[in-house]
Image (cartoon, rainbow, N blue to C red):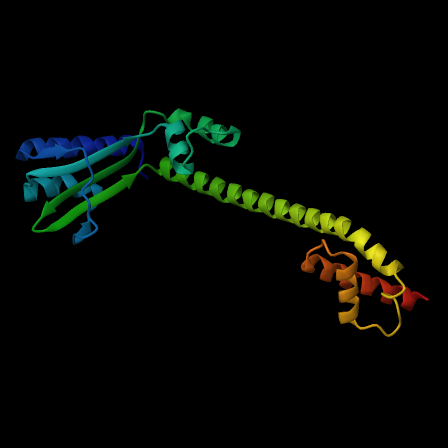
Length: 218
């Protein structure tokens, strides 16, 4: 198990080893995307420094701040009630070392390690779970809104088509037994010249259905 005190001790030993061999410590992370790299156990890093005697050592110790970590994890500037609850739960870890990043170059190879405190891994796992929960809630809310909008569109369309359908069904020419669908559409366009063709077609289709249903029931 790795705790904050273990990270602090590693950092202390690295500083001592660096001072012994005259190496400078840079508090920055070495970009390693295009470099060959090996992972080194944090416990042997001080011995590696003494053996390789590098001129530069890269070291970053991250101090935990619950509010900042939660804000960063969720990419939010302001914490809502749920995020504040998570932050409050972990404030007892504020000021403790959460992550230690070490690196040095030797013969063109980056030797590095990232050590995290076990409790910080637990924090990140809990935060990830909350990320998934909130994502599921957002999807569910979006789906409900989409369904509500669909139902509203259907209700609006039904309301808009109702007077047209009513007038068509009341017209003897529209309900004549042998009139074709094309003629019914032409009749509807004649009766409602100001209505767009798409709306007219929908009204005619629904009116035909109602006429058929009425005939079936009879």
